[in-house]
Image: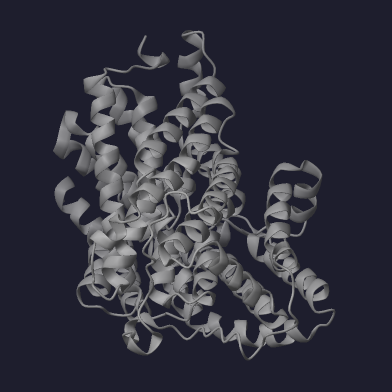
Length: 563
C-alpha cells in the first residue's frame, strides 16, 4: 500500500470522530466507541499489530483513564465542598465587587487564575477548576467550558512545572546522538533545550497576548443577546492589557529562568496586576456586559451542575477565608512539584504496571497523591474543617461529585485506549512507522520547504489525538527535528513550533473537552464546544506557522547545530 493511502487510513479514525462530533453533533459517548472500533480494526488489519499489543494498549489507556477521572472528581469535589461551606457565595460576591462585567470576570478567572493553576498542575486541571467556578458565579455551562478550554493554550507548554518541555521534548528527542553533535560544536544538551524553551516562550507570548481578546469576543458572539463580535472588542484595551500582564513576565521567565516557572510566574504576576487594574476601573469599558436572564438561555447552554447558592449559604465569611482553599491548592501544587522531599513523599504511593501483558514500553502508573486529584481532595478536607468545622459539607459534596463521573468515565474508557493504540502502533508486523508518524511523514513530503508553516499543525494534531501537549511532544519532536535537518533549517525553531502547536491543540483535545464538560454536567454536547474551540485553535496554529516562516526564511535564524 502506498504511503498516501496508509496516511489516509491512519488518519481516518480522527476524521470519523471529528465528523460525528462536530458535523453530526453526536455525543462523545456514541462517537468515541465508533472511532475506537475503527482504530482497533486498522491496527490489526493494516499495521499488523499483535492482538496482545492492542489489548495491552487498551489496559494502559484504562489506567490513564483512572488518573484523569481522579482529577475531574477532585475538581468537582472541591467546588461542591466550598459550595456547602458558603465560600462560593463569598467568592461570587467578591468577583462581582471587582467587576460586574462578565468579560472581565472570564479574563480574571480563566486567563489569569487558570494560567497560574496550569503552571502548577497541568493535566487539564485549569479547565476542570475554572469551568465550575464560572458556573458558580453565573455563567452558562457551555460558556464556562469554552472559557476553560481556551486557556488550554498559552500556559500549557509550561504546565505542571514545565513537564511538556522537560519530559515531552527532552524524552521525545534522540538525546544521545544530538548531544554528540552538540559536543562537537562546543555546546551542551542543556544549552540546546534552554534555546528551545526560550523560543517556545517568546512565540507563545506573541500569539497568546490576543487570547483574552478572543475570549471576550467569543463570549459576546456566542452567548450575548446581540450575538455580536464587536461587543467583545469593546473591551480590547483591557483584554490586551491582561494578555500582556501575563505574557511579558511569562516570556522573560522562559528566556532567563527555564521551563519550570513561566506559567506560574506569569499567572501570579498577571493575576495581581489585572485584579488591581479591574478594581480601579483601569481600561474597563463604562458599559457593563452581561448575559440575558437565565430563563432565556437555550437548553444547549445548560449543564446539570447547579450551584444554588441560596440553598447552601453556610455562614457568612470573609473573602480571605473563602479564597484560602484555592491559595492552599496553589501552594501545595507548587511545593509538590519543586520540593524534592514533598515530591518524593506524594510519589511514594504509586500503583504501577510495567510492560503490560509482556509488551515492551507499554506501562501505566497511578499516583493518587501526586496527581492534582489527590491534592484537590486533600484541600477540600482542609477547607471543610477550616470553614465549617464539620464533615457535613464533605458528605454532601461526595454524593454530588460521584454522580458526575459516570458519564465521563464511559467516554474516556474508549477515548484514551484509542490514543494509546495510536501511539503504540510503532511496533508492528508490517514494519511501519506508528500511525501518527505515518500521517506526519505524509504531510511533510507534501509541503517540502514550507514545512515550518505546518509544524505547529502537526503538534496540534498530536495533542488532539493524545489529549496532551507532553505526549504530542514525545511523539513528534524527533520527527520535527529530522525534517529540519533534511531541509537544513533551524531544528530549535522547528521543535519550538511543535511545542507551541501542541499546546494550542489542547483546546480541541477530545478528552480535555470531556473532562471539562463533566465538571459542569455538560456531557453529550462535546461537539458544541469543539465547533467553537476550533476558532482559537485555527488562529493559534496559523499565527505560529507565519512566525515560523518569518524566523526561518525571513530573519534566517540558525542554531548551534547549523554552524
